[in-house]
Image (cartoon, rainbow, N blue to C red; front, side, top):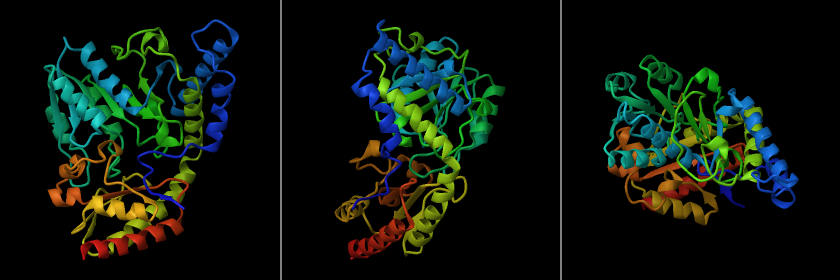
Length: 377
């Protein structure tokens, strides 16, 4: 039996999500842009899913745009704002611990003449708000900060950052990929301008995501072609994916508190047991941390060797973001919180969801103890 402790990378499709998707894969497969009935049925279910998602996230249906996932949504938000407001300014603010979907987009814009300020974070991964305020310039057009970090689980003060952005009349984008399903998302209360989400992080299908664009926010389309998504995002709609995403978000929101109550004791037990081992340190905060996230650095043990050992025991884990698997560079997130190269390279991320159990925590802890002793020898 496989024990999957890498749920931050992706999650298993819920049975009820698959059941809701199947009719739109098998029977109602019509193109939503077609005039005949099976096409119009697809169009109708897209709009009903959009309305349902908007209600769950407390925003308007006209503010929900379907994309291929979090990476596209991040790219679109940042490049779209940069293009729209390039005559107003070419300065953007982000942090040093963003997902590479944001950081590489920023690097692309820098190659096109934009200036980007990368904010520091403290030892637990929290943004320096004073540095943020001091970094704002007259030509600053966008602030982009992730809601929850995918490696160390830090939950950033998004409402406070939003207030700062609004006071200075600057658009604010949030990468909410890891937050959805773990933190209550109330878009009206958060008062952000753009937020990115991905389906496969909340037990939905891969290849589908959302960019929330607050009404009145100007943004250039990233993908051109047809008139889908009200002319903002061309391409034949992923009808089954959209249906699955709507159901997955519904399940995630309805079970949010139950999931949190289940995960916190599991996470805390895992942290307690692992940090009792000599030479293991926890990365990230204890409080204001995603309920299923544990990230540790292990002295004297190479993470790649440890991951191979765990895989042989049918345990799934990671050393950081799935998008950087195979990289020999130390984690940019762990470097940003002050770890040296060795500790940043020798890290392990364990991430849980509602399917995991105390028995699995005990099994993984015992196997990890044996693995660390063996590899240190």
